[in-house]
Image (tube, rainbow, N blue to C red; front, side, top):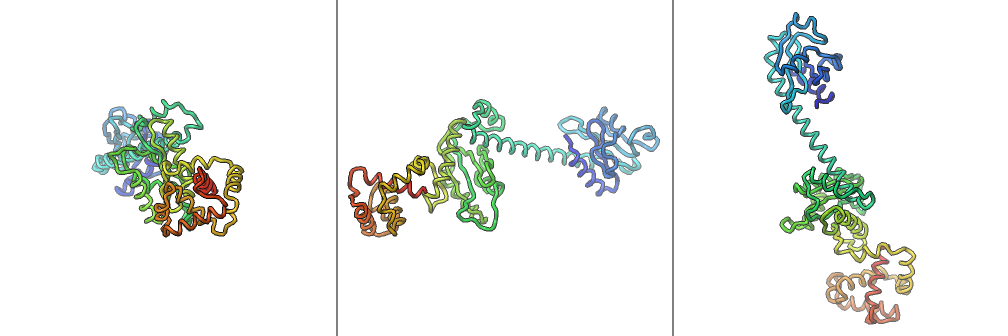
Amino acid sequence: MLGKALAQQIADDITDVIGRNVLITDERAIVLGSGDESRVGQFHEASVEVIRSRRTIAHSAEDVRDLVGTLPGVTIPLVTDDRVVGTIGLSGPPAEVEQFGLLVKRQTEILMQEAARIGLRMTRERATTELLAEICEWHQSRVPTARLLQRGRTLGHDLTLPRRIVLIQWDDREAGPREIGSEDISRVAVRVFDSDRDLIAPLSRTVVAVATPDDSSMRPLHDRCAELVTVAADSGMPLRAAIGSPAAGIAALNISARDAYDAMHVGPSAQPDQRIHRIDEVRLHQALSVVPIDSRLRLTEGLLGPLLADRDWAVLRDTLIAWGDCAFNVTRAAERLHVHRNTLIYRLDKVGRTLDRTLSEPGLAVAVYVTCVLDRLG
């Protein structure tokens, strides 16, 4: 239970404070740490009886004459969870060092307990990281769902409750001199996603995943993501967040993770002015992103050919996409683009003239809209 590094640190610290050599042994009476480092690894015979009897024993110079590795002083049992895990020895005349005994014992046990708590927390954090990473990669590994559900229950998480996967990524569109890693992103995520039911884990150097409750009683998920982006920006970290589909259970959580990944991938093209991308808002882009490149080229060149050569093509494309996003409503699209309604009508007329077709043809407006989305996806 007591590691060598911790034992040596405690021994050094207490030796410096009381001016007497302190050594710490394990439950086999082997010295783990000592103010006199030459004693580390030696057998401390006086500790054997102390461990067996669970009581403090003082040893005079005459007492230690026949005890291996023992100097005059006091040896005290170290107890954790009602179990003797070792001893702490103070060298010097027993009458002088005995007065420090109880204080040293208590301080050492406090430090041991704190180290155990830190170790337990780190172990739990590591287990949570591994669990969430496996959930996100489950479709590739096919680890039995029962095993992952059980691991979740062991960590206090019911993975059958409704959740969504959120992916948080450094926004490399605003890359600066500072290099941002998953530890930086995780620190910000923990400040916002602080529910006992949130699972947070880095998936790569620049991507952190959060499995957060999809619960109407909680603050809306989009608002939490907005807070995260704002908090990060205030710290000089440009981040983007992608929100997956609602899920309950391992398979659905894996789909939510893949949806969040797709939203992160197509979001900047579909929503260039936004930092939070919901999969529900980019489903069309998600579907079109899997169309092979050569098929995209044939479709865009076949349908939009003359437009692609127009010097205003980028503006016309954004106009057509906004028009389609607004259900082909001219007034709403003009508001979205922050242009006058007549400007939008002029642009649509220009598209029709360039194609030598009318956008009122059955199905043409939809086909042009979808093809523009494909073109903007790259």
